[in-house]
Image 1 (cartoon, one colour):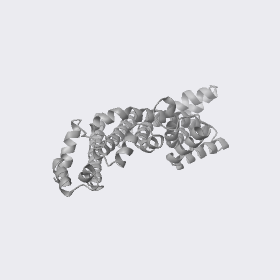
Image 2 (cartoon, rainbow, N blue to C red):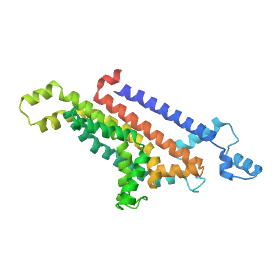
Image 3 (cartoon, rainbow, N blue to C red):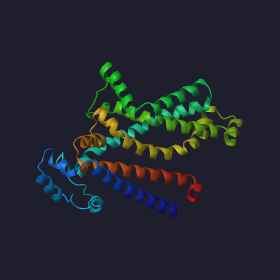
Image 4 (cartoon, one colour):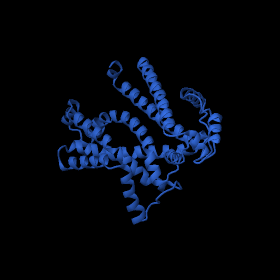
Length: 305
């Protein structure tokens, strides 16, 4: 397990390094940072002075190495638009994004596990088909469209929930549902497939032959084993949700990292865009690593694969 862990750690570090380099290069290719700082219509000599001041006249590889070195020491630079350290902006916003991500994954599990169990127990019935239809709709429906539908019904129509803001817990209800519903189908299909396999296993048939109540057989003997792969998938989907929060936070004006990224893109605030992109990417890589290690711990065959 130690060797496998070290290999996965090394691979995760390489992926994080490659993502940081790719993000740095793509952002530099998307526009001239010196012009973004100086503003449209600035004089050529002012742009040249800014380019020299920020080291933008040096080779790209030198700029990247300098940025990487500062980032590894916790210095993410200064925001061009907000005029404050990027690390401070991230500290202020990250709690909202984490709350939204964790609430969304909890919503997805609460919905998908019972649906997956019911679909497996009543396989090929109308209940199974209904659960699969819910999964297909959740997978096919763009989350921003679903979010707008929620706003139309519960904010504009019924006036039950606020449209935007982060003033209270009620502001998180619609974003949580919109984001969580999008990742519900993978969980539901995984639980359904796992339950179908487990319910057909010998030890479940033995439990039934002993006369145990159906509820005990399903919950105590079958569901516990069927949920093992869900633990690993949860880590991967949480990383996906953190990245996907950019759209949902923008729709509901939630003051998190996603909304910060949207504002920074609109204002061409390169240091903030770069830092948020790097943070979300590293977070996803870290959660994927955690999922791999959990899988290897649960199934030793993976370590030698």
